[in-house]
Length: 166
Image (cartoon, rainbow, N blue to C red; front, side, top):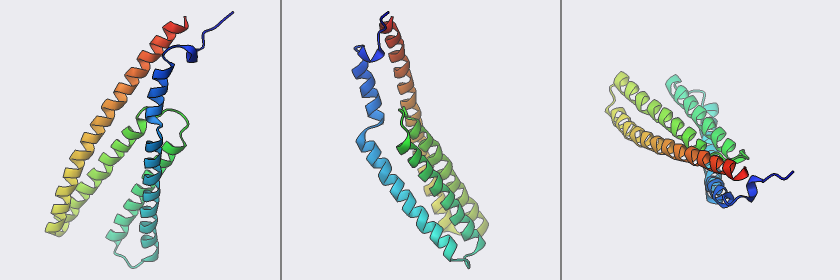
């Protein structure tokens, strides 16, 4: 009884290109740099929070939120780097959702604090936050399109491999 192994089909190079595009060395290097940067910034903010107990409560709350955001980025980058299977764009999709959520938090927080304290500079920060939010939404939409393309391509390849294995 002989069985055709999918790796012996002519589509093997196409599958390899699909997988290597998501696990490429430059992308891994970029994630290492981002992980180190996020860890460094989060460490500095955490040190400031822990060594300055006289900070006002509002400042401590803002720094705590920044630490939580930093830790969530560290977790995402570590997960991406340690994942041993093709991510098929899920890392970009998760990063996009995180970017939208954190940018919205910044924009709305700046707007709320600006309204509560009547400081015009915070309105400018909120305006910048909304510009960044629009960019984050556009990047999320692009990531969603890319994931949809990759899923569609995987379905087509699986269908073709199923036919070739028969």
